[in-house]
Length: 102
Image (cartoon, rainbow, N blue to C red; front, side, top):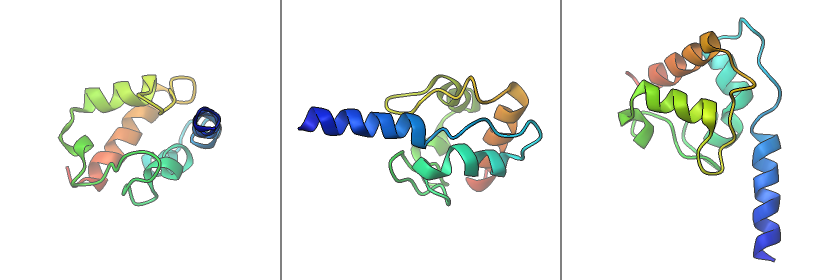
């Protein structure tokens, strides 16, 4: 039963946290809302995925670490390399940093 629940959660994360590619000119906030908010919370407070806000572990990580994680996935988090280009990735990280107060 645990295995079935684990597989169901993994499938939901793969589909539920990655709903299509954002428009080419989407703002960082729009990208976050479309690809990240469902798992990391609309206010970056966390949920299925960890918190990304000001007092979170991600606030002390480098931009390169966050970019790598977004593009390649980590743990249960899917990769977004097929959904984001470099400019979109930059706007997304800038948005997360601005919400972290950095």
